[in-house]
Length: 68
Image (cartoon, rainbow, N blue to C red; front, side, top):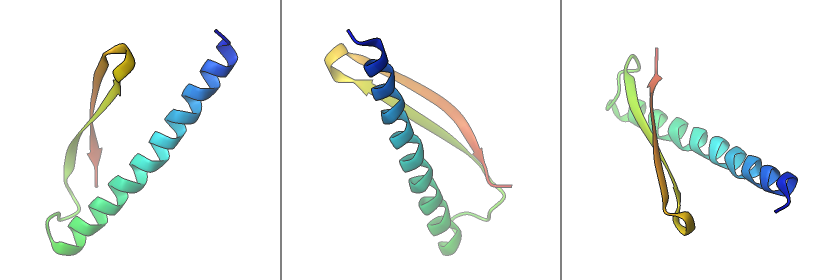
């Protein structure tokens, strides 16, 4: 295995996930604020699931997103 290629591909994947996830969250929060579903002072629980089917890996990461 080429360790450098492996590490670079993981980093590339994680960058895409990070940027795309942030955009999706921002859009969902903006829409919820606009419709009144959120007031803008909430703390939202969030879960991210990482799945790697070929290796039967499924891991959850939990946290919070604070709006104020």
